[in-house]
Image (cartoon, rainbow, N blue to C red; front, side, top):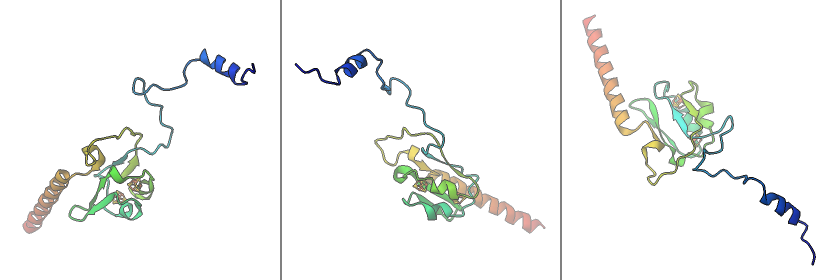
Length: 139
Ligand code: SF4
Ligand code: SF4
């Protein structure tokens, strides 16, 4: 009988440790430097220049003129990082978060700057405007 040439490799592998990562029983494989995971947005830093809206190839970002900020629905994001590279004030960054599975595509984890936060900011801006108006009348 002819012995298959792979038999010695098979036999030696039988006595080696498995080379798999049994996730989720263990931690996932670490992400490398420069990994492009879920996008993070710093509302405070954003100056509303709209450059990110212009470069995004997937229609993820929408400009909100009343508050001069942007909103994101990350369900469409293709993790290309173009918005991060173009932002002049570094309001955007790619994190190393990649466990994003969900049964709700409009899940809060996939949205940045939600409706209630926009309303809150609108109110804040209106109050600031009123305060400025009252101050200039005093002068
Ligand atoms: S990473 Fe790419 S696809 Fe995702 S929001 Fe930024 S520009 Fe759009
Ligand atoms: S590019 Fe940056 S500063 Fe300009 S709108 Fe987008 S997040 Fe805001």
